[in-house]
Image (tube, rainbow, N blue to C red):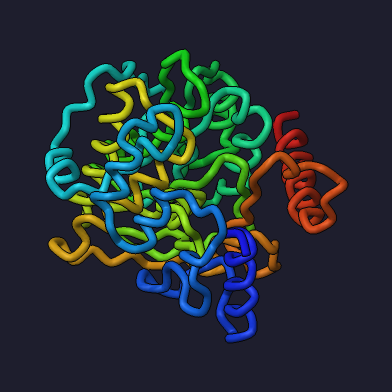
Length: 329
C-alpha cells in the first residue's frame, strides 16, 4: 500500500469505530492507531523519521530542502525557544483605516484584495452580528470601509498593509498580525473563503481543528478556524516568531502556518502545559450541517457545480451575496 491508501484505510476504520474521520477528538488523537504508515511503499525518508519520532534525523534529511515546505519544518527546542519576543522587523507598516472594535473577542478576517472581492466581503456580512476586524493585504480598503460606514458591519475595524507579495506571505503573516491583535482582544480567525452559518465557537486560549491520520508534520493542524488569546501568549508569540524567521530568510512556503502551529506545540507543550481545544466537525464544518458553525471550503472546486457535495455552501454563499448587494442599494 502507498501512504494515501493507508491514510484512507485509517479514516475508514475511524468511521467504523464511531470516530470522526477527519477531526481529532482531543490533542492526543493524532497519527495512526490501527494502520502503520511506516509500511507504506516509497515513503519519504524524512517522513519515516518524523513518524518514528526521530526529529533530529528528520531535520538532518530536510535541512537543505529550501524549495519546499520540508525545509521549513523545525522541531529543535533551542530554535523554537529563541523565537520568543522576536522583533518583527522588515514587515510593512499597518495602517488602521477604522479602529479595532472595543470588544472582548473579534472575528478576524485576513486576506488580499482579490480574496476580499471574491469571498471576504461575504464572510464579513455573514459575521455581521459579531465584532469583526478586517485586515487586508495589497488591497484598496474602500469597499470594506464603505460596508463599515454604511452600518452593514455594526462593530468592525479595518487595517491594511502593502507588502506587494503573494499567497505564501498572506497566509503566513496573518499569524504575526494575529499575535499583535491578541494583545488587546481575543480572536477567532477564519479563512476568507468560509462563511458563518451560526456562530458558536468556544472561548479558549488555543483552539483549532486537529487532523488524525496525517503523515506529514505540516498536515497535523488545520488553520481554517483558529481561536487565540493572550492567555497562551508564549505559544502564539513563538508561532509568529517561527513564521517571521522564515520570512527574514526569504523562505516562506505554502503551509508554513500549519507547520509553525504544530512544531511549536509539539516541541514545547510539556514545558508549558499547552492544551489545544479541538474544534469538532460541527464547529469546523465541511459537510454543511444546518447546525454547523463555520462552513468551510477549500481547493479549486469550491465554486464548481461539478462538485455536488458543496452545493449547500454555494447556495448559502449566493444568498448571502444577494443580501449584501441589496443592502448596498
